[in-house]
Image 1 (cartoon, rainbow, N blue to C red):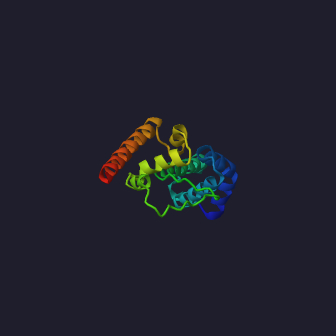
Image 2: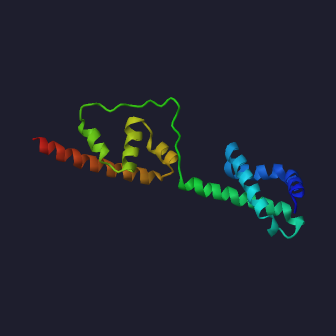
Image 3: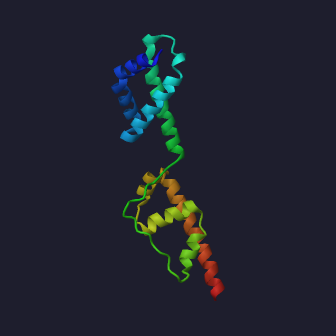
Length: 160
């Protein structure tokens, strides 16, 4: 298959390819990137297509598989964009026992505690935005509270 024939076939099914990608990704930028990547892969693998009558199902499968790859990668990497108006809080100069104890928490505990107590997220909102089960959020917060309690108790006893 030469470049002109490939381009003609793609133009014939272009809308279908975008609809397939949209059904998986629901994001215009991701759809465009994914279809573009799928077309590059299809061009590179065009020799594997033995029957031109099967071009539409073949290219549809290439797009579908590319979308699944994007979704798998998205699961591995969760990005939470910061709002543009995010205020950077400066830590106080004075050592505050609670802040020092928070620094000693595991990062996942510290994140939950900060979002819950400082930013006012509910357990449900934390569960949805972080992709964790509600039970997981609750158990991690309980563990974080216990660790904070132990840390602060030890510091309080040392000050006596």
